[in-house]
Length: 226
Length: 245
Ligand SMILES: Nc1ncnc2c1ncn2[C@@H]1O[C@H](COP(=O)(O)OP(=O)(O)OP(=O)(O)O)[C@@H](O)[C@H]1O
Ligand SMILES: [Mg+2]
Image 1: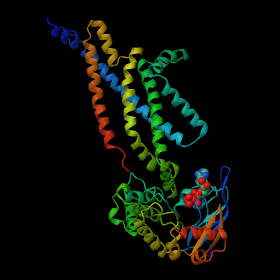
Image 2 (image 1 turned 90 degrees about the horizontal axis):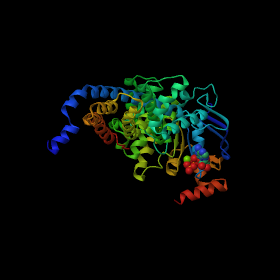
Image 3 (image 1 turned 180 degrees about the horizontal axis):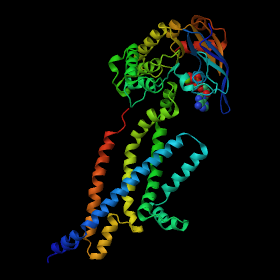
Image 4 (image 1 turned 90 degrees about the vertical axis):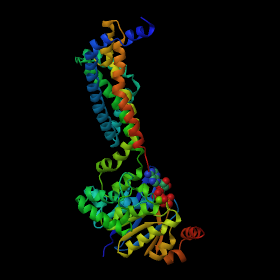
């Protein structure tokens, strides 16, 4: 066996790959489900907090800022471990999926809230005044005048942050979640061959490369013109 | 006939800053009142109190029979009767000219989209911008943007229009088009309160000029009287100063 064949046999072993392909695919499905759950709940919760914050109720805002700062400073891995190993002592026993989902959704919520909030505050005071002076209520102004402008400002940072946090699904391995990386690494230890890792890497590429490319497109499309 | 705008003993504090110190202002229907005064004298604050964009600390404001400061007043409803035009236009950048004009018609005045569009187009027509209905603010000149802002206000058929330095953000060659629209509004009988430094316009079109200084109305009267023979030293100094420019 020459070097090249040896390399292929080690990293791209067809037999091993065929054997573990179904495992990796099930990991892909789980990763997609998890990612979608995180994105939908995290972004909605973040938007909701930013909207509540815009009401300007002091004690509520302190609470929001505290929660947001907390989840922005804790490493996501620490949050996952705390939820998965910590909550059972409080009588709750979330599954690996639920733990990873909740943890990353909270982290995304925190970052998203800050980004939405920045968008809302960056929208000029004059926009509020013009809208209110024509009789639109606070909520209508927020909905029809402020948010459309704020969302446009937030699209680029929000997409980047969402991608970064969604990639964190790989952290689920520490709580034995059967997502792509978890499937790949257990396949590696069972087969004594690193080929499944290559498949895992390929799966991440297939999943995230289109998203990254789409994000780049969105960024240029929505670049702010006044 | 009772005044259409009646503000009595308006005070406004910003923290420890006493910005309006008991201002009384009655405006008759169809009257054009010009408000002048040095920077920081409280002109904008007074206008913004009239439609309660700013909450007065004390006093009473009645517009078109509505007690603006009563907690029972539906302020969003009342504000439709008071149009406001800002120095910085404040058009919604994400909407077309027509979208800007029709938003409140649809959301506040409860018009259908078709009705709102008809009214909106007529309003744009009045400011000479019928052909710009589908342009975004970024595609319009400053003068055109300000005319769209005027259309946005008049589309709601207000009883009073408030102008806060409507031409001071404009290049000199664009001022005329906005003043022309204001003049035609005036000719249609609109009651207007205008904060502005356009003295030529004041002379030609104002019924009354109000001079404010330090949160108070110092002197008021017909334009000629205020500009040619002001009674108070402060008015004289201010008039002299702006006429030298
Ligand atoms: N929201 C606010 N908070 C604190 N102070 C304010 C606020 N708005 C206005 N002021 C102060 O109130 C005073 C009057 O302001 P106002 O804008 O009414 O003056 P103005 O006569 O319109 O001046 P200008 O000609 O410069 O527009 C100023 O000293 C200003 O700094
Ligand atoms: Mg002002």
